[in-house]
Image 1 (tube, one colour):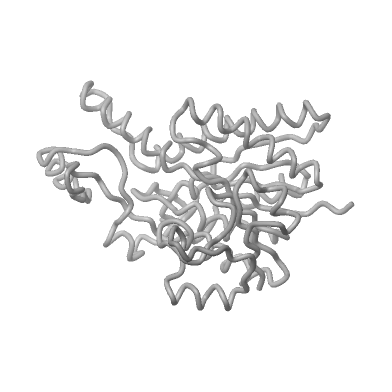
Image 2 (tube, one colour; image 1 turned 30 degrees about the horizontal axis):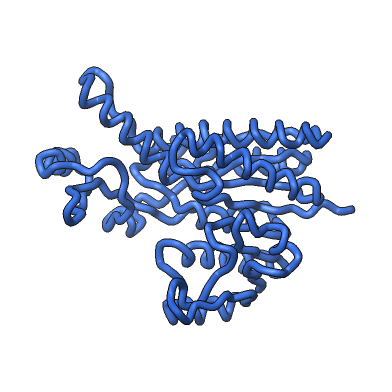
Length: 311
């Protein structure tokens, strides 16, 4: 049987929101990933990191507030930390699950950097909220540092950072090498560590990269056969959470484009996943995108549920 080259994108449901939640969630996620491996899928895995990177950022900021000799960590460092410990949990749990099934496929995590354009419009209008809620005094301190803040009615202020478009996956050759060797690779976690390329130097950027956007790019770069995006719902829906809600079982890139124009998809939840599918399928015309939940994976692979996108 020929192995199918697949990029799997894991959302918050697969990881939980706290350290303890993650320990439990990843055990269940590992079983689904092992099921895919048993079905002869060659996996490259990417994942979200929103709650985790925010937790790390809060912790490092509070450490600096209590112990002034400790410096708060830049966002690029927080991103690297989140990649490391999420990758650690996924690879160890997946390795254990595979070995219990008699499968000795190695699982590795690659700390992955992704270049961004320093003149990306997102840097001039940052929108992604991170960190703790602050008082007006703390917010003014952040502004003096050159950071952006946003007032959240009734809660205080939060720092906001940019989410620029990804340009290049720096470690793509290493990812390809492990993928070609038949190993399972965890890469581009949290969208990748955003860096700005200055001649031969990579400088960390105060930003985050959307996980879904990098999933589409990673699948295209690897010439994958399929991109599987796991989310919290079993299908993409029209009129989501309304009385007229209905599942969309399949769509082409052209149909997806028309629905985007009609604002069918939620801007901060489903739209990035649809855009990731479009990016992948624009490069891989015979590729396939499946959007579903972890719990519905078996039925989705049989075509009983989930949403399939094709070129």
